[in-house]
Amino acid sequence: MIDEKQISEIVRKVMSDMKPEDKPARKQIGVFDTMEEAIEACNKAYEIFRYYNKEQRENIIKEIRKLTHAEAEIMAKLAVEDTKMGNVYHKTLKHHLVADKTPGTEDLETKALSGDRGLTLVEMAPYGIIGAITPSTNPSCTVICNSISMLAGGNGVLFNPHPHAKRISAYAVDLVNRAVLAAGGPENIVATVANPTMETSNKMVNHPSVKMLVATGGPGVVKMLLSSGKKAIGAGAGNPPVVVDDTADIEKAAKDIIDGCTFDNNLPCIAEKECFVMSNVADQLIEGMLKNGAYFINSEQVRELEKVVLVEAPPKKPGDLPKKVINKDWVGRDAKKILAQIGVNVGDDIRCIICETEFSQAFVQTELMMPILPIVRCQTFEEAMEMAVKAEHGNRHSAHLHSKNVDHMTAYAKAIGTTIFVKNAPSYAGIGFNSEGHTTFTIAGPTGEGITSARSFTRQRRCVLVDSLSII
Image (cartoon, rainbow, N blue to C red; front, side, top):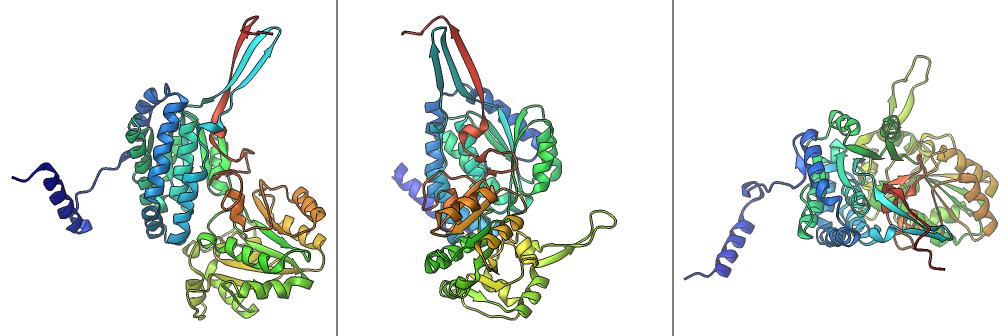
């Protein structure tokens, strides 16, 4: 007689031998055909979840962390397959980073005020159901990071992902729900639609059950949320400059800049997008970059590359001049593949394209989100700083500096005014990778919350007891 263990082993063997197209499709938890269904399911789950205490919520977050670690590489592969952007190795690292360094319920601090007239408590309370719009650049990382932070705050979450990342985003929503169920939580506390569109986004934004909105993406989607009339957090675009002065450790700066600029093929919004270097150390910096996987293209090749990675957008109104914008087909693609488009064939060791340009050149002024780094020579630190501030375009997102001069650090930090300012390290140090500080992929510069965490998605509630419980 075959026992239950043998039967299980036979089933497992048969399933593993089946081709992917033969395997029965498992219904993903929290993924619905319509936004109305997603909202209804999330509301039903929230009626249970709203009464969960911090310990229960933290148990759920522990399960999300565990599953994210276990399936980091699976999600990384699916993200590259789904979006055609980035690379599996760096995306795997990003998932581990999110699992390890996104704060949970420990981020919620209760304040107590005690005096002659009694006791006042100020606690961080949930908004309710949060509607979140997520990008194609960091899709599953944003879904998981947002889910940890928002669930820690006691909220339910509705996601409307970028359509170009719908499969990986649905996978991440399903993962979060599997973790919630494993910890004994309610089904569908995080929900989304299988086919996100502008219509599903509008339904989510305007639904009365949705009490707060969060957008991680470009200026258009942030503007839309801010005009909704609801509490909104907007994580907008950036064009982060890196400045190198003549006091820096140039060898280290060269490696750090290439490491940061090429991380996931420059998809993170914090990554170095243009470099301003003092002329007396520029040759040394470029030489160091070439030793760390960079390929230098000349001015003629720059012009050829412009035709590949930039396209001309029509004027928004009569009288406006045409504007060059990124060709989205090349966002997050490998340097090797981009170079091949201009007839340059290189090996897999080349991970970044560098070039010398003028300040006005389009690569400097445009957030490319590709492993392309324009370099501008400057005569003085003050000139480099001034150019960097202008190239950042007032996004107040991220900026970077390589210097040992504390006065330069101070002056640049004050002038640039960005949410993240990294000194003497790759840009990804700004989100806690090989550095101190927590991680997020929702960096709210436009609305001022900065490096978001659980407390960002809560509201203050005050509880006052007069003339009692003051024991002194």
